[in-house]
Length: 118
Image 1 (tube, rainbow, N blue to C red):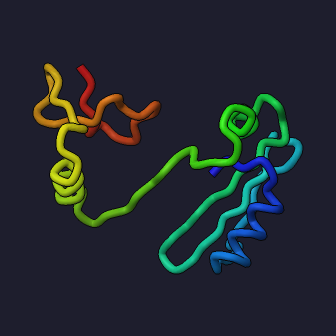
Image 2 (cartoon, rainbow, N blue to C red; image 1 turned 90 degrees about the vertical axis):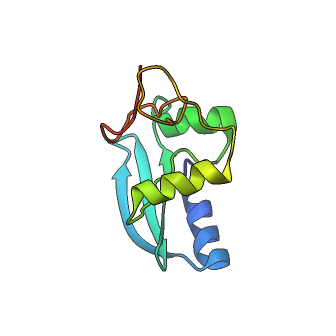
């Protein structure tokens, strides 16, 4: 999550929602500060831009604090994809040159070659 006030947000996630701080990163030199939080199998990273040009700073100016990226883990990608497609009919599109359904629009930086783009 990109946040406007890292210290306030980290305190809220730890006191109200039971998360524990498991790591920190960044500083003024890097243009950001981050805190990694954990609760059971859930991991959450809060990032505050300390430089006006950092992506987190630009995001929070436009949207306020919010979710910037999501990562999910599964042991069976094909089953998870099939479940998601079945659960949200009409939100997936097949496109020319793709072997099957593909998410559209594609993510800004595909993490693997499994993304189908014409």
